[in-house]
Image (cartoon, rainbow, N blue to C red):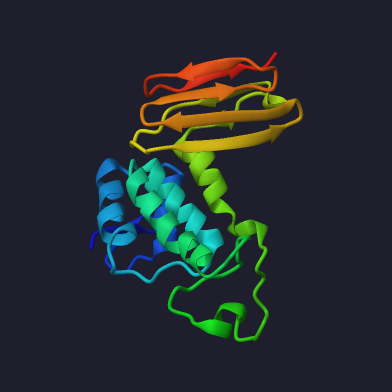
Length: 198
């Protein structure tokens, strides 16, 4: 494995240093490919421990153009919580745990938070990182949005703002966004669009 840790090539590099370097834009193209193949998509380094850190790992995948891998990770990891009946985001999750093990944390029984805001990474990953729905002016007065680079059958969301909800829906390669003032904009092409809310 040819990975990067502390600015040097290393075969014993950890996941965290690598995905943070990639997210910070500190890697060359060659290093990015090495991190993707040898660390993030390979099985040679131990996984991250919490949903909080999984967010950063998945954001790095998305930034490196591997949105499909990011979606697979979301489905497997956070989907695993849903399969066990989760209705909120858990502080920790290990798909290999069973029964009451899912409630224990740091060696203490029933210490795991089952409603943990720091574990809500998929909300950011799906809306901002995948679709590019981001505020570019205070209070969402101006925003950007774009069709995902990968084909998804359907995406729909609503974002609360001080002016009302922004609603967007994407089906295949077409989409629309409706701003709180009722203005509808059709989404076309892969370039980000800027929309002003009046």
